[in-house]
Image 1: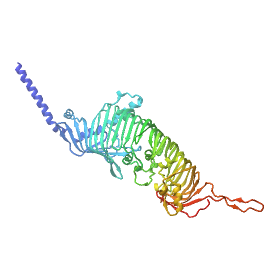
Image 2 (image 1 turned 180 degrees about the vertical axis):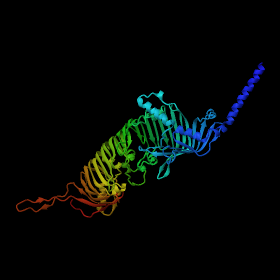
Image 3 (image 1 turned 90 degrees about the vertical axis):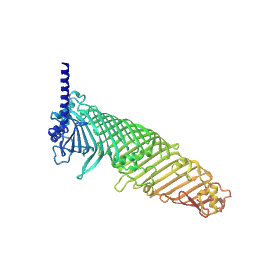
Image 4 (image 1 turned 90 degrees about the horizontal axis):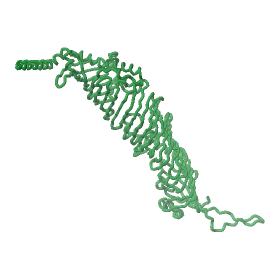
Amino acid sequence: MPSSLIRRGVWVIGVAVLVIALAFAALPLIASTRIVRDRIAWELSAWSGFRVTIDGSPRIEVWPKFRAILSDVTLSQWTDADAPPVVEAERVEVDLSAMAALQGDVAFSTARLVRPTIRVERTASGFYLPSLPTGGRITRSIDTARGVVSANPQKPDLGRLPSDPFGTVEFRDGRVVTSAGGKDTEILSSLSGQVNWAAMNSDATLTATGIWRGESVQIDFSSARPLVLFAGGAAPVTLAFKAAPATLSFDGVASMSQNAYLDGQAKFAAPSLRRLLEWSQAGMAPSAAIGSVSVASKVTASAGRAKFENTTVALDNNPGMGVLDLSFGEALPVISGTLAFDTLDLRSFLSAFTPIAPTGQAGPGEIDTSFADKMNLDLRLSAAHATAGPIQLADVAATAQVKNGLAVFDISDASAFNGNIQSSLRFDRKPDGSQVEMRLLASDVETGAFATAAGMTRLVPAGTGTVSIILKGPGKAWDSIFENADGSFSATFGPGSLNGLNLPAFLKRNEQGGFFALDDVADGSLPIDGAEIKASISKGVARLDKAEVNSQKYKIWLSGIASYAGRGLALSGGIVSTAQPQQQPAQQPAASGQAAVQAPQPPNQSLFFVGGNWSTPFISPISGVSGQ
């Protein structure tokens, strides 16, 4: 009896195994007869909402996975038969359910698109997005979720969300294109990644890599309630964008409703702002930007406006904090706010917003003011310490403004050279060309240190003084500003010394006659009581209206012109002895009945001519001694 039962059990198991083996062996045949191409296309259409067509015959594989391999697949809009397909794929691999196939149904959980082409269109907001389907399970689920969100926008009933399965969509070696002039223009290439979304009411993740404008990029996106997000509700979102020119991340809450908004923490970093501008094709001169930039902030954005609170900014490793406001309500984006720095490189900061020539650039170069057409800017800045080239500043208060073709950077107050500095740089775009205006007022500064920082090392009085410079000229190129500038220069100096002048040696050489270089008599210093210089500047040429240096025994004066373009000098001058003459004054005949009177004699004066150029001036004596 037991032997009979065992034999029957073995027969039953054997028959079951045979049936199962025959069923799997028959799957390709069943698939070829029942799961035909149109049935798969219909199921894909019902799932995606697009009209799916499959030009090639399906190929069914059983091992290692039961799947259908489809060739020349297109997804198009149902409403516009003449429009190009939204998605084209050379091959689509669909993982099928074996049990559903035996029952004549199509059920799949994973779809792989090989070498797909995705067509996108530019929206009114400026983003490139594909056309959305007008039906399908995904669209119906979103519509249902939209009703759930509308019933309670603040706290929607998540239990009422549709639970339709979605699955996994993988894509390999794809590209994104847009139509321009009847031709496809490639935006993104080498696109690979996947979307994991088990069910419509579950969480979802997206990971994608590709090549955009010659750089490899990676995007990671996830949301715990993606269906609520697509339905216009608020949902948690994390986003990370990585590329060599820049990285961006966001972690917070987002809404894609009509009143879309963001609220969370954001970070941005670019190792080179110049490279970022080149890569982003923002239309701003890449040569005008230098250095790195990073921003970390609490972001609240809605209705075309973003507010950055508790913002930490680093420009060329100069950290600062403040509040920024970004608005898109006007024709151009508007950036405004306040930033406070401990240390700040003003050149690096200005280079991001004004056409300052970058460090290391060979030659002054052209001035590109196209940045003024791309944004409006209004920033208030402060820095405990700042640098402007070789100049060290402290307690800086400044503003940077760009609007309607006008760019202005003002330092309203700063300490430097034991005095006070105020300056302004202004670029004004006009129909006849850009105009550049520069102003500098240095009050009660140590003039020796100020002159050294400005590159003026010859015959500058050392002491305390005030310097004012105003220049205005065409802004086509940096050379043209100084070569064609109009303006004025004035300086007053208190007691100090005139270094680089051996006055006795100068007077001796001038008395002997013959040309001599100023360097030959530069090994001395002359104590002075004060000095004053006034010059008018026209077309890059400075004309000395007054130039006097007063010492205890002498007064030195100069007049003439100095050219910026040729660096040439054409000056005449004199050294007047102010000491009382030792000889007795000459007697003048007296009128009848009056005593004789003494006539004052003109002081001795040594006259000379200054020629050559700024770096190597030479002196030519002028014969004769005359009164002043």
